[in-house]
Length: 215
Ligand code: GAR
Image 1 (cartoon, protein in one colour):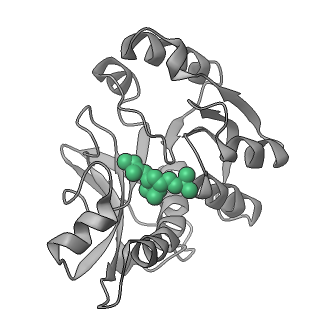
Image 2 (image 1 turned 90 degrees about the vertical axis):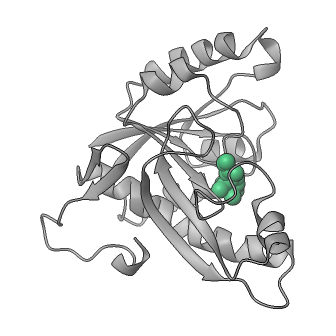
């Protein structure tokens, strides 16, 4: 079974969705550890209650990005994961760190990338007046919120939407597509071909967790 390490910075609802999918038998992975850069991340408590090893490495205790990333990588590598899952991990990662995990570092972002990388994605989507918004799971490259797309979910922006309403609807989709993406990885179905991700056919004929139309 593939081993994953999840990195968080706060609430950890995507992490919870991964744990729930695993517990429901829909995600055949061993969640070896949850690591936060913030000691007070609420998700650490949730993970610990679920019986998962937790760690925090406070980025404020390090002189620079490289030093923090080196300590983080050492902690991660202690678990020998097949995949590192960024689930609301709000730190820019150094190029060396990203290269070290090339092809085995996934991120979820609350927009239809390449639109709206960075922060305040829902507010910016409303300001731009886009009609379709959503979320993306992608392999990570050294460029912020960029990389080969594994899965996206799109939702309509409704006339009465404010930032809270829109982010809540996108978050519900995040909780569906992240377990799906990690499951595809765990099943060995994802192949990187340059800037694109190819999804191979199911080997055992079971239906995907969610509609392939969302891919
Ligand atoms: C999620 O919406 C995730 O997509 C976003 O942070 C939130 C974390 O929520 N990530 C990014 O913006 C990465 N650029 P969670 O802690 O409840 O999973």
